[in-house]
Image 1 (tube, rainbow, N blue to C red):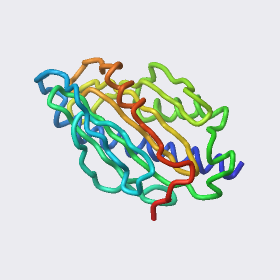
Image 2: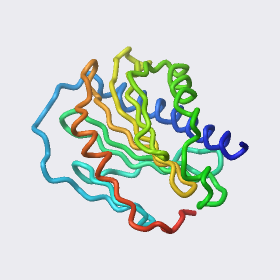
Image 3: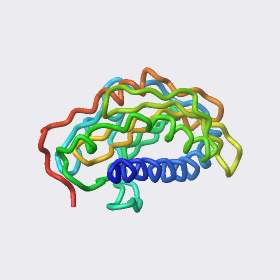
Length: 200
């Protein structure tokens, strides 16, 4: 039970950090006009510890670390010219990486995470389980600086004691995110080893 509460606390800290990052980035970009065409060939990002690959439209950049409950939150992100933001955050939660509680979300986590998002001022459109260790949700967030309404999808994966939070959202006010592009991004994630190295 203690591990599940800790895992939930980690996810809630992700929500708070992601909301803050979105406010900063999207507050600056929410009124930008759509530019350019969709990119066909994507950049394959390999995680620093060679644990997974993930395809971005172009090379993402490392963002400042956030402080999690146990370890730092490492982040990589990309804002495209056509107004879409792609991101991934990673954080270790500790404990035995093979334990069930470090590889499966608690059954009652979905409504708790949805309630936390609402408390952050986000409107939850939908939330569902993709698998035992993967939860996906769609949100609308109001940017505090300018009142812009931003639509984004988030996928949280719990694997071997690490939480991966993938985000895909529009940075243009009141524009729905392109869900097919987000699915391409989310579904491109490939874990390289069942017993991959852990970060420090």
